[in-house]
Amino acid sequence: SRYGAFMTALHHPLPFDTFSPAVFTQMLGHQIKQTDHDIDALLQLEDCTYTTLLAPLDRIITRVSETFEMGQHLESIIGGSDWRAALKCMRPAITDLLTSIPLNQALYEQLERLNERRGDLTVQEQRHLDVTLEAFKLKGACLNEEDKSRLQQLELDLSKAAANFAQNIIDSTESIAIDVPVMDLAGLPENVRTQAIENGRSAGKTCAILSG
Image (cartoon, rainbow, N blue to C red; front, side, top):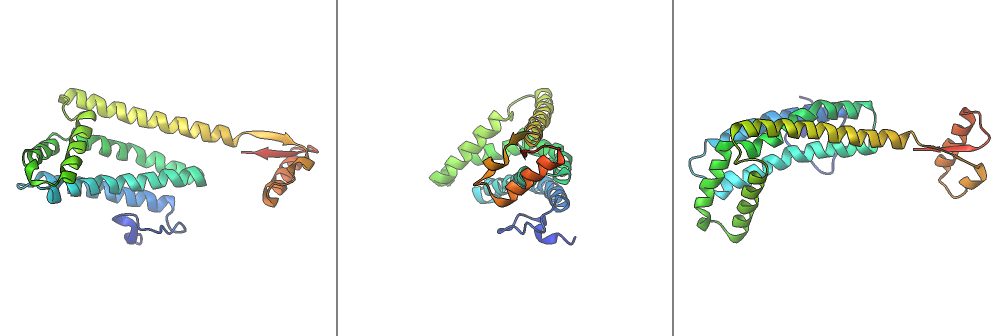
């Protein structure tokens, strides 16, 4: 792929001129597939240690979460139909992935095996393990299979509803238009003043119009 430099993880400083919606979609899709492979590898471990299990798991989750959050951030500040479409396309897959990790019974059992050897861990590593186990439990690790399936669907529905709510707020903000006398624009940046005056002219008004 010509986007190979981005496929594994975000590199900072991020080259915003290259990180387009198309790159974001391809990169996140690649990372989701890689995450499935990496989780499977963790399940095959016979000797679970902090270095072989918990530290890699943390990096795996951070990798995909950071990429999706970057896409959300860019959509919020750049906007546009391309970014909105990219997020809408990838949201079900990333939600399903991040929901399924703590519901993975075999992975939870691997963490429990590590917990049985917590005496081998440093204080900081023990704390990390405790926080991870608690997070897994709060996200449904101990539910039966039927309830796990129901929880996954609820998380997906909630993700869609939250995204729609956020988009509605953005759309509502962008639709705001306020009539303002031209003389009251003094002190605003020149580009804002020019656009407001042009908005007023386009609407056939003698005043300026400030819009979201």
